[in-house]
Picture: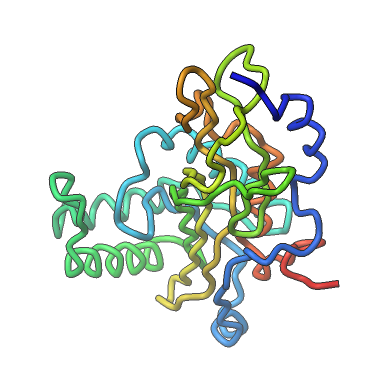
Length: 257
């Protein structure tokens, strides 16, 4: 089958990735400045559970732990103390033992009442037993995006742009007529910050990377990438976007110039 888009052409557009100026896909964020001014945040803990109550997709769990490591470095770089994660995890596990697990793996649903009890009790326990000011939830979630149909075929979501990846070793390019509009699985970092006074301080998100590549063998389709979220530059960009303006990002892609 005749090939149109060679790997060299894909690589040519690598310079277009990254923030690259204004990006209309930047997410809406919520920042409660009144609550933040009332209770300044100095010491935080990164939650070992998701704000949604659902577990991280199994194939993203190792990558999510690495994302948390980079979030910790980012927070410390900006002057925050980061408490050991067990100070959250112990409180969370105790609440689960008291009220039961909120997540039913057979249905994939979260019981709303149990969720509220576990979340409230966990935050209350952290406040009573530590000097932590806020809990930061760092959900690595899977969502759909698409590569555009322009010359560079960049996928854009949650403030980032990412180039196509090829899954087939030795592949020369993408076949003519490939459907660039088909859904593509991508990863996003969703940040939620609660003070230990039970106030919602901040929430936003930032795109990380694509989770699928183009498999050019036989019928060209998207297949899951072997090594997901292995580009630290991409992860760090997503972290910066997700925390803005709680921590202001230089050259934030939501700023029109």
